[in-house]
Length: 474
Image 1 (cartoon, rainbow, N blue to C red):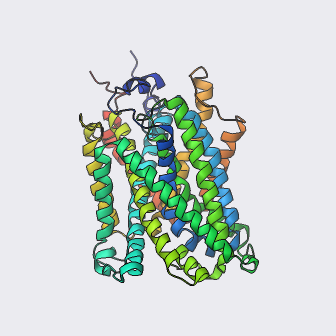
Image 2: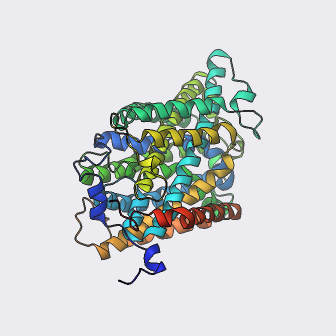
Image 3: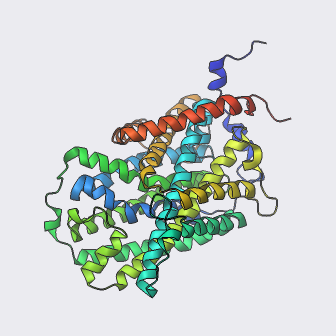
């Protein structure tokens, strides 16, 4: 028998039937338990998406685009919308953990899937750490507004950001890990409550901000031109990355072929409406030149509009709850990506071991908590936001291509959802993702290349020889 060529090894695909069989089928029984319903899953997507991004991104996006930042949000939302439809089809066709990593393994082959997996690790680990840092800032703002006490800088900021250790960020990561270890359904219920609170707080912001709306603040509208709008859209896309988290729950959802598409599309609609309302009301209530460098910017806008501190207190409290929710779901997504990669032999088996009592990957969750806690506690992560967007956009591009590949290679697979307007929508999704990637900085491209180089080294030295497709389990 002829040995497979290097090309055949690198691009070997994992059959969809094998993926579904590993999960115990659509009724579960393969390790993780199917306990999450459609509303809880939709809350996962909203919880992972609405958070630090919208509470902080305007301070960097408005200086880039001016009031035209609203158009930047539209571009980012349209890109996310096209991609969400592609995710919905693949999630309903391949209802397993792993999200775009698993989809790429079934459509484009092992080496592409492995690279996507590392993109997702970058997305979730860095964003989890970054939002934990943001939680620390809003917690300090809330303590200062309510009881006049602030956590000392030495204990609330990382080295390089004026402190020694960001202790609140580490505490947040530990709390999220404890909740995740208890079980996916318990985490989903807690997240659903936090989602209701955060959406209510942001709608309160919109209502109050519109009372101070002035059309004068919208001129000049696009002071930085098309280039500014594009650059801001690339930055803003960081605020949409949580939609990917819905598909990471593919093995823990009841009736996945129906539930996954509904949750993905539903979360996108809610997130887009909230973001556009917040952005438009914010730029109408405050001159564009005052956004740059603001901390807890939305709270400051409310204080200026009302001349009172109570709206800012409410917003800060909402941000504390909101960012807790984001950290919870991004850490959840990280553990499930690593679970899928570990089960395939791409990384050590530690991450695929499921506790028989809680039916969660406890050891993998602890490992993720340690890594994210170190990032949140000791590394100032603001400059990595664009790097997170890069990893996400690459993964989104692969998902959109995967839809077209699977339509050709496995047209008869049962699909709970089909992308409308095929193949135009997947093509537009790829085009919009590449457009946003082009707006990222050269430094981001260099760092991303370094990350993929590290991934290649690990693949050659470990993953290639441990792949389950090369050495099937006995």
